[in-house]
Image (cartoon, rainbow, N blue to C red; front, side, top):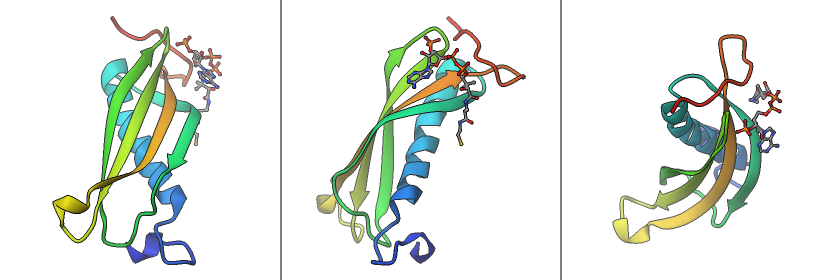
Length: 111
Ligand SMILES: CC(C)(COP(=O)(O)OP(=O)(O)OC[C@H]1O[C@@H](n2cnc3c(N)ncnc32)[C@H](O)[C@@H]1OP(=O)(O)O)[C@@H](O)C(=O)NCCC(=O)NCCS
């Protein structure tokens, strides 16, 4: 949306980062079967700009499982003007989430 643009009129990188954090956290919550906290962003690469009106899709996969943490890889794709032929990868990220208890302290992952 226009409110998410930087002064050049492209989508602000911080907006995309928050969407990626949300996408990754959904998978992390599923694996942790409960609350998680983002502890580290290891990589965030913007390959192409995203423009107002683009349809952005985030795909998350589990890259590593630790004792209390999971590292999630997220790939971001953008489609322009409802044209499936325009779909291109615009960003990739690697984020670690920690399963936390009711006191916001790390807890062991189930299973
Ligand atoms: C997340 C939090 C509860 C972790 O507590 P902590 O005492 O620092 O965590 P620990 O040192 O015990 O590490 C917990 C896990 O995180 C991993 N971890 C910690 N820092 C890491 C880093 N920089 N990179 C990768 N993994 C990391 C540890 O390896 C460990 O994983 P494992 O149990 O699977 O081996 C705490 O750091 C916190 O509350 N941070 C703020 C979270 C937050 O508010 N995020 C949103 C920001 S707006």
